[in-house]
Length: 164
Image 1 (cartoon, rainbow, N blue to C red):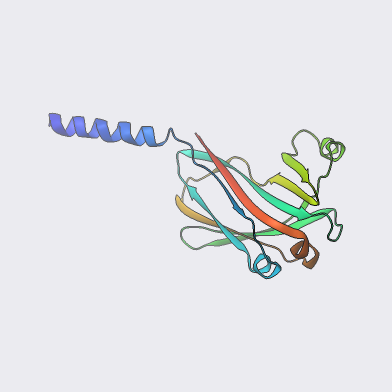
Image 2 (cartoon, rainbow, N blue to C red):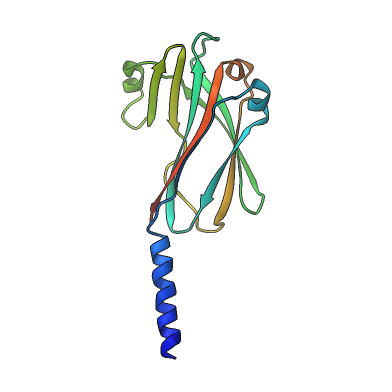
């Protein structure tokens, strides 16, 4: 009986310790093509019931290509049970501090200009919890707009998990 109690205590300590390490990852596809952007790039999002997640998406835009004030992305989120949830979002293209400030402090946007490339990172979802279907979720990001497909040079996805 004593061995069983010690084993149970050790398992509980191991489970608690595993919930102390947040999940965090940044993935970037740097050699994108218009065809692949139309089909979509897939990124893993391992969800655990011990964590709350914040996510973001990043695009490197060629500023010598067509000028457009937004980037239109489609997110297809697929659960471990293969249920699919689709969402289309237009993110504002930010090129300077004045534009970022006009959106307010909660905009959660990072930008950086490098030559003819402009990197924009937009917060996508904050405070995501996984109460019912833990496991490997898939986030597929695609681009329907032909102007965006021609000017996107890289696309990425990042997430960070915080212990609840």
